[in-house]
Length: 302
Image 1 (cartoon, rainbow, N blue to C red):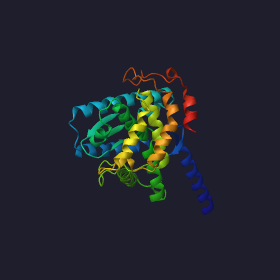
Image 2: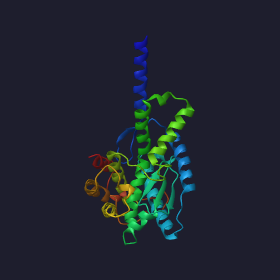
Image 3: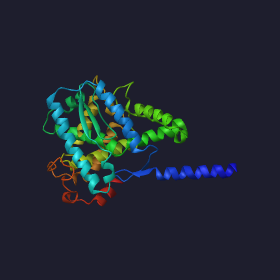
Image 4: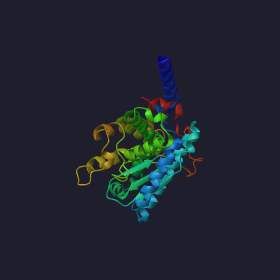
């Protein structure tokens, strides 16, 4: 009887893990998640509201306008891609919001659901040059891609398996909610290190780079200036203010090399013009950019 039960549990676990798999937009990578969108969106929204209520939001109208404008264009490009490529179910999980926090930290992050925060320290690093918005779009596109790829769901799921040994799958609702809330805190560093996004894994960082390049190009920003941005980030490490965004697994040299390798694909999406409207239904189609989605996915999977 025990063997029968064991085999039944193993089969149920295998079925659960299979049904928990999903596909990352743009790259097509398969991933698994032990948490539903509803769970993580609800809890991350609570954490985000708590963070915003405690943060010192910037009163710099120029900074706020820039972040809002770049954010809206990236959001329009993202929504358009999802709608045109069979991910319409994801649109209901995105409720875009953009805020600027007054802090010397060279930092930015995007929580599940499309809640993007940019720090004034990062905006100072980007500067006001002719291609400052392209560089800002590079970092915002990168952070947005973490949310779009549900990297937090994936990371929290891995932590659940490691820390709880899978027992949380059958835990009571209250216990599960408390555990998930604690893991979201750990993932985003809210509390002990308010607003400091802890590093994702190397695979997730590279994936966010790929996705960000494509999305910024669709939004009308030149993806070649992503290299400029990451070079600035690398140089900033030599000063007193060390960027939190650089405490990631890929080395500066490897990240920039990988971005340069992705550029030919991303540039096929770039026309040098902004999307004709911030409306997610009117962003120019991928066919107008001279590359089929199937071709893009094939190239990005290399």
